[in-house]
Every structure is written in structure tokens, then in C-alpha cells.
Image 1 (cartoon, one colour):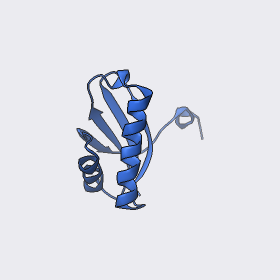
Image 2: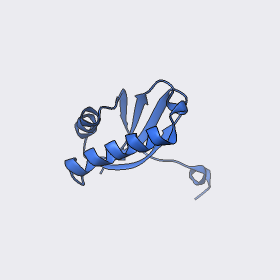
Image 3: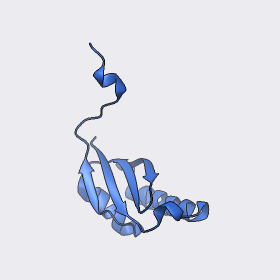
Image 4: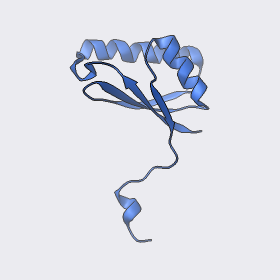
Length: 92
């Protein structure tokens, strides 16, 4: 199943409290349970004014539905073409 990166513009995301982040996470998980197991939240990275989320999902539309139901922005959804890491540069 495809992997996606979602860019969410959330002003002062880096300043959210642990309680606020917990509430956002709980809401996301609740919506995911309602939608079924075809969408999986892998993890998210919180920066100053954005949150970058990694999901496994059948398609972009499913991710947009999740965002709409949860009340989160999904400003940019990008399908991951491939993953590289430091070992990619090693000779075969």
C-alpha cells in the first residue's frame, strides 16, 4: 500500500502543549478507528508552524477524508516514490 507525507500548516505547532498534542493525536486515532484499518498513521514531525505526517493509505482521497473528519488541515499530500537512507550510497 502506498505511503504518503502530509504537510499541515498549523500556526505555532511547535508551541503546542503536551495536552494539546495528546488531544490532536486522540482525535486522529478516533477517526482512523471509524474509517477502518486501511489507513495507518506511522508518525508525525512537529516543527515551528507545520506538522509533517507519514501515513500508509490506499489513496489520497482517504487521507483528505480523514483530515476533514478530524478537523485538521491537509495542505499538501505527497505520495512517497521511494525511500533512501545512508545505506543507499553504499556500493553493492
